[in-house]
Structure formats: C-alpha cells, structure tokens
Image 1 (cartoon, one colour):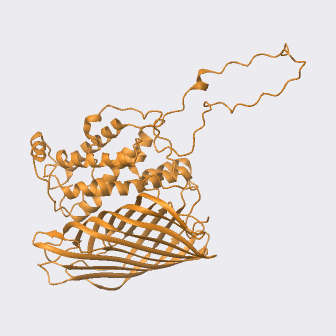
Image 2 (tube, one colour):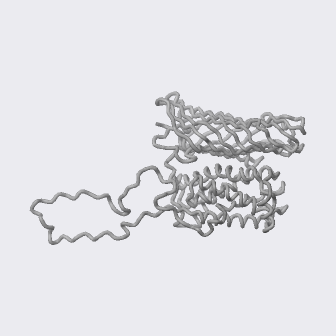
Image 3 (spheres, one colour):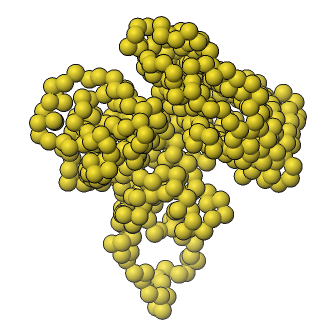
Length: 512
C-alpha cells in the first residue's frame, strides 16, 4: 500500500483470492465434507422424524386391526430430504476480493497522492518481471493497515465457508495479486508477509469474536447482535447481509471458556527518555480491551482447530490512536494436566503484534513454541500463565526521528511471558512482558541491533457485579545501535487508573 506520510489511505482492499481463476465457479461444499463440523456423531434419523419407537404389544385376540383404524399416510418426500449443506464457495470468495480490490484501487487512484494506482497492462507486466523489494511506506500503513486489510480478505474467505488454512491461502494469493496488479510500484515482500500472515492471525480472532456475539447474544436483540458482529468483522457482516438465507449458519465455537474485560481511564507519565524522537510526550486517555478465548481447564473442550485458544488485545489512546494491537493463537497443540490442580495446553502459536508508545514503534508477525496453564494453588487462589518464544518478521522505527535509517525490517527472536494471580472473585494481579530481541535488522547504512521490551503490571479489584477498578503501570523500552545516531535508548513509562467492566461475574478462573 503506497501513501504519503501525511495521508493514511483507507485500509486496503483485498488481494484477489486464488486469482480470478475461480471467478463464477460458485459451488457448495459437498455433503460429506461439512465446514468445521463438530466432532459429535450426527444422528442418522431423517430430518423431521422422531426416533422410531417400539410398537405397543397387542392382545392375542386382536389378530386384525379394528375396522375404524385408518392406515398412516406415507411420509412425504420432504421427510427424506437431506439436511441443508454448509455454504462454501471459492468462486464467491474470489469475486468478492477482486471486487473489493477494484473499488479500493479506484478510490486510491482518485484521492491518494502520490498516485501509485494507475494500473495498466504495462505496469502489471513490469511487476511480474520485477524483483520483490522492501518498501519504505509509513510505518502505520505497512504494519497496521496491511495486516488489517489482510484480515478483510481472510474474513471474506472465512464467511464464505472456507476453513482456516484455505482462508490463509486466500489472503496470501490476494496479497500477491495486489502487489502485482493493484499498484504500479514494484511488489513488496514485507507487505506480502504482513498482509497474508499477519492478516490471518488477526482475522481469525476477529471472525471468532464476531461469531461469539451471534452465538451467545450477550443480551442484545438480534438486530444489535448483527450490528456488533459486523463492527468486529466487516467482511463477515457484509456476507451475512448480502447473502441472506445462503450464508453459513452461525459457526460452532464448541463453547470455550472466555474471559473479557474493558478498561477506560487516564494515564500520566512517570519517567522516560525520548532518544532520537522529536515527538512530544503527553498524558492520555485510553481504552484497553482484551479477550482470552479457550482458556484451558474446561471439561470437554478440545484444541483440534487453529485458534481454539487465542488472546486478543487492543489499546487505543488520545495520543496515538491505536497504541497496541495483538492477536496470539494456538495453531497446533494439545492439552495436558498435572494431578487435579493443573490444566494446560502446549504447542505452536501464531502471532501478530503492533506497538506504538509515543516515541517508537515495533511490529512483528511470528511463530512461537509455548504453553498456557491454570494452576489452582488453593481454594481461592489461582495462577494463570502463558510463556512462549520464537521468531518473527519484525520492524522497528522511531516516531518523528531526528536521523534517517531507523525504520528497519528483519527476522528477530521474540518472547512473551504473562502471569495472572486471581484471588477469589474480587482481586487479580497481572504481570506481563513482550520482548523483541536483537535480530539483524537491515538498514540502508548497514546492520543494526534493536531490542524492545513492553512490560505491564496491574491490580484489579472487582467492586460489585460487572464493575471494577484497575491501577496499571506500563513500561515501554527500546535499546538500539545504529551507525548514524549517538543516542541508544528510548523509554516511556506511564501510570493509569481505569474503570474496568467485566462481562462475566468472575475474574477468569476456570472451574473443573
């Protein structure tokens, strides 16, 4: 996505899915291959019939039925009709993504300067033969805009009945088509990674949260449920509106253990170091939302599908807009237990992280090995934890930098640790950190080293019902080594007081 540094283009359209090869080839999934079908066995009794019952015994003298008895009418053909097949269409996915890209290209061509959207046969031919590059578009465009646009492509595929891996393929193919045929500039490999993989990891969380609203209702009327789901996942909302009666039924979540919270408050600066940034630091009002889905320990819940466990976090502030966005989910894994007090899951996690704490920015799309667990230490004391480590395609940058060459890309190690100590249903202490380690990050001037740490500590007290209060400390630190700057560190710490709304009455502990 190309845009000037002063103009954030509307979030990108979609990268044509599985090319336009499937155009018009709309078809439903075969009856024997339901989409995300639950593991429970399906009854073989025809739709509309009750289970057969044993006929009552008749007296021996009743050799013939009474004359007044009339034979039962034979069942209608409708009674033998097969249940409706789940909706699944590769062709509709391709057409919707292609249409979205066409509209976006025309809007960008009309309103975005410099204009990189006057696509022609010549520009497409040139891009097909061009080497892929790392573009230098604004950080928000590449690391926030592209993953979100990838989530739109992914959501269009998912809401057309495709599974997780098929939808990832749709986002990947669509991204490649946009890089070649959506813009006139050379195709960008960093955009390809963040749009397809970052978009998938973000898009699956949004898709599941939207379906959770439709499935559980949360006290909303049907109309408001549809509106809330569309706000969370616009692509799914579009398909539910544009194809009434044909869209897939509400996706079966298998009833996960879920803990969500919304925090609204204000922060003040406690300490910091601006380093090479010219940005002003200021206090801010902030909204912080998190949702953990598929917490380990619930009886009967399985982890057979990607993102049967995930953590979604979004923080917005008056100083930065989107200050933090993260989605981390289990791709492959299995549950484990230790005695009667410990339950957990372990496996491979996919993650997307974006962080922008006023002075600097970091974003990463990665894979990690890790585990989640819950340990019931005592009757009213529970520990929940997550730890993972892996590697991600990472970018860092200084906000309003005083020197060039500090907007970098590269594969870098990363690690996450989170602890949550829950005291009954009243008190919770949260500690966490996300770290993005050295990695060799390529810069125009040579190799540079970059280390970013985001740490938080909070104390939450549930006052009554769904209402609580939270005291939170956030620390964002960056140490780096670049040839063109003598300053080596940036830091931004804040203290905040928040009102906390808890949709559930507890504080997240799972009972078993």
